[in-house]
Image (cartoon, rainbow, N blue to C red; front, side):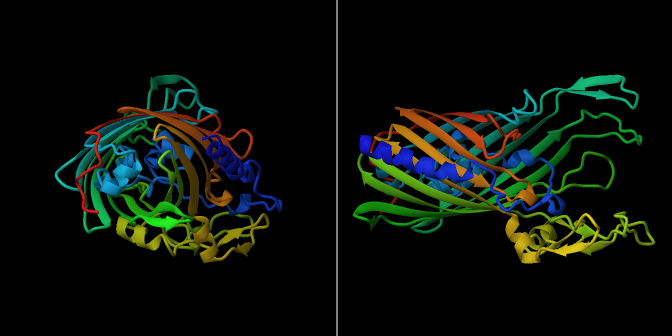
Length: 433
């Protein structure tokens, strides 16, 4: 055990060290190039569990558990696969639940938090149904009028409820679909200065996911499995908080990932995983400006798009157009257009997560990873560490984020997760090998 623990510590150190400092080593000023994609209800993309949080927010191709409802529901069709059950200690799981809690943006606001409850139940052979509840509290906000008089206090909150179904579609591939109801109450119906009354935003969305896992293979004399997964999430209607026609996209997202499981022996299991993420919503265009930097309008009073595309499109157009709509230019401090390149900016919109997990005796886990988002697209860059412990039906996980810059809003982010897995302790009988 000492030998393998030493290997894990070394790998985790090497994983985190390159991201423990500012990556902008050439002192390039990206401020003028900022073109961050924004959506309504971004809480839908926050990693809700400690396991994935400790591995750099990867999860689309990791082994299934109750949190697969968020990452990739189709994985749950494999929960009682013979190879998987054997690899995880021979415990068949017919029903499972997960409860997660995370204070969020603790470095900025002390009372924002995310709570997540999910569960699944196997149905027949290689099928599962699942559901989840995600609740995001934004703390307490005091509304004031133009002269600073207090109107009232309000506690904004958002939640999403999911239900879904997963099943095997072939010998090595599973698929799933889930439906999500999203509710976002940020103002409590307060009346705005223009006389309009705000309202809670609501939307209905769907996820489509798939998961493939190889048969056992030999890698360096050890048994290994390769997994590949995808999840197209939050495909749904735009959301509005007022009675006007202005509506915002919800965060439709494409997640692709792969994982490699290596059984060193019956007591030691390593998993390496990488995820790629791409928002499937329009990139803000660059609007025309005059020599003084003022926006240029047409005869109807609309701002003129200089590069990119008009973001006021339908959901389907936004999803398919999100791969080719980056403007590829920006205005410098002299209000001259500078070229980035459309393809280069599109690549900046792909976020990367990578992580490592080590299990000893199917009871104790160590995890580490990193997450990278380009400076001009949000600048979320952090390493993560975590650990887990399993005892009979109970599993406890925790994770801690390590930002790559000082005074980062995600500093001191902790996640806690409790998982409960119920089922007979046997070698699993639900799938042919």
